[in-house]
Amino acid sequence: MESKKRKFKRYLEEVIIPETTPKEKLDELLMPIVEYAYSIMPSKLFRYRECSERQFDAFYNDRIFAVNAQMFNDPYDSLIRYNKDYLFDTIKQGSSLDAIKKLRDDLNKGGHLPEMWNSLFGEERTKFIENIICNASDEFLDKQKSIFESNKKEFFNNIDTIFRHAENFLRRNTFIACFSETVKSITMWSHYADSHNGFVLEYDFKNQKSQCDICDKKDTCNDKVTHYIYPVIYDTKRYDGTSFVESYLGKYLGLNVYIRDMMFYTKASLHKSPQWQYEKEWRMFLNKNNSAGLSNLCIKIRPIAIYYGYGISAINKKILHEMAKEKGLKEYQMYIDTQSEKYSMTYRKI
Image (cartoon, rainbow, N blue to C red; front, side):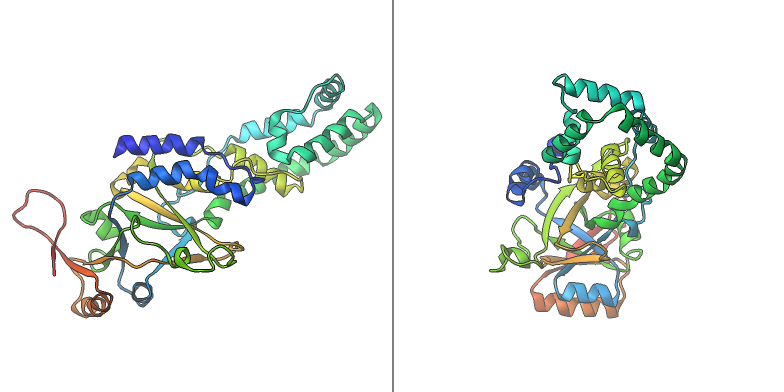
């Protein structure tokens, strides 16, 4: 499985979806990683839950809630790194009078702005900028330079605040539901199922569809929730989001720039420290129109089985059992095999 996940990582890195990509082309660009992730997805994925009224209600109504990464227990989750020195140097060099005059002269000799400008501003906007630079006189550039210099100190004092906004942007605007390949992890039961007093739901995403997928209005409904499921990449190096921060900075400053790769959201959220490797995690990403500012998104998919924690109370087990029976789910009880030499939870069918 690890070799397959490394291959998935390569596929993920190769997928680039500019912000200007037409909606009708999104599926085509996503297809390589969606299909490969589906091909290596286990037939069973598990979701650890604690016993609470909210979780009981979600179970009864077949709801899976996806929340922002800022609610997770890992402070590094979906938190990008970026090269601040590179960004400062780029701003300083690009705004120098000599650099702008040299660029103007090169353009007037038949040159063009670097391809990066097209990805940042779009082809039409880039041509407009080229035209302005080509026709800029020394007097005009000198004047613009003096204006920039007078505001430079304030600008660089404020830019750190912009960087901090960018650092947490993905954590606030990505909706994730977490699953595991295993139901036998002592640590997972301890951390995510109330120290073995909760329960786990089993899903078969290869053979189950969401309510939105089977709805007749799925192609026209503005409230449609789409979902993608990918394996987490455990890596010693954090995800480099320098290019995203560069685009974010431009947008914050009011420039008509585009994000070069809208997969930044997914790529940053799929990179985690190897210290979390025991979770064997897969992540479901939910998307919906006009979801900015929401605390969560929800999708309806029915589980196929329930596992009761080793220490679950009799009353909570009874409540869950009645709902599981109504749904026709398989039921299992977790227990400790005192005769086994392994530190691993096991289960028996009820």
